[in-house]
Length: 317
Image (cartoon, rainbow, N blue to C red; front, side, top):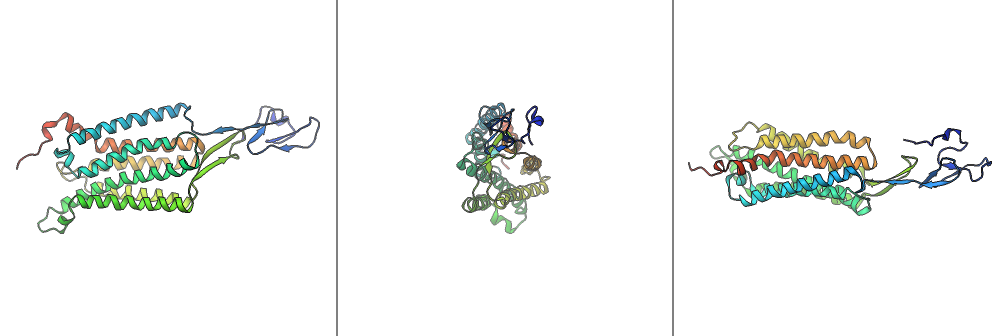
């Protein structure tokens, strides 16, 4: 997009060029970080554009992030206070704790995207955010696999009984999230993201943004996270009709449907925008997808714990 001065069509010099003398026929190009004024007689500095803390939308993002973080901490406190209750113990309370902590960190990681980008924040914003999300999705995948294994193990003499336990769920979370860590570390070693000054997209503005360095590693990281989310969604969808007293798969199905929908919808918007608008879209996707995970998986459980405590008791057979 090129913005022209009012009346620029009457000037002899093209955009970004000036005449040092009024009657001169020679046009001189301005430096890359400057552009010509209205009269085309001097160069003026371009405006630096990034998602600063003074923007109204940033205030909304910060308020939303802190509010959702507070809600997550409250839910975490409810689960810790009711640690030994059947609802908290169902489907591995350790994995539930890991999932809640990772959702909390995802709400807070948006602060890496705000303000003037520098090399260190460019390296951390994508890698830290994706590792946290991979930890969340790995925890959900672990929960889904636990539901599948639990019903496979109901048959007498089933070999699935050996896989039913806390260690299996922990191994799934550890292995799946470790793969994403290896991808991110390899990315940072081979071609890390860095601060970039885009002086060509706009005539009068400099876009201060992060260059992802290697597109291959960047899309490998996104692709792996999408693969985990797709597997979790498919498995949860297949076991969603199992008895409610043992099964939270339908809540996982809804959560992964929200998660996948948000990030799929974000891809074309992400590809078509630049600068602070692209960053704002990514922050919105982080907040929306994390909220979907928190509300679909944990709010139903909290409702039972707080509003229907009489149903949150272990019944004697």
